[in-house]
Length: 71
Image (cartoon, rainbow, N blue to C red; front, side, top):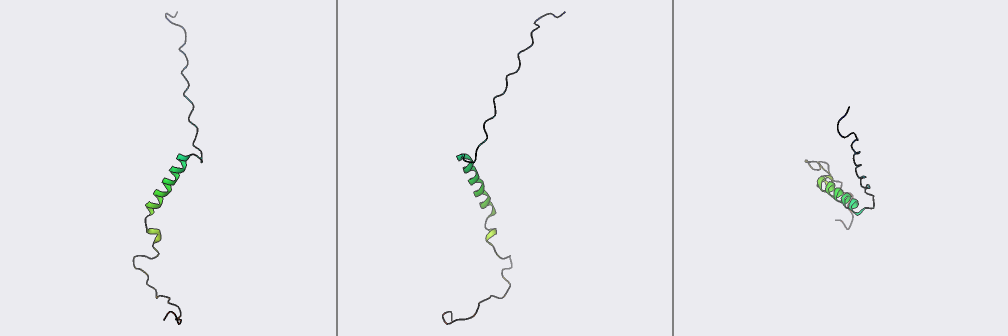
């Protein structure tokens, strides 16, 4: 025999549904994408603009053919 309350406890309350995922047209998403892109560009620095190594250009310059206006 059982002494005391024989009713089972109530079931736990269900958690609220998760928020809807952001869409591409969401202003916060576009601002975050711009910010990330800008940070990546600034992180690269000036290295992509360098066309030579530390030694510089070691080849002979191609000056072309002289003409009357060029001297």
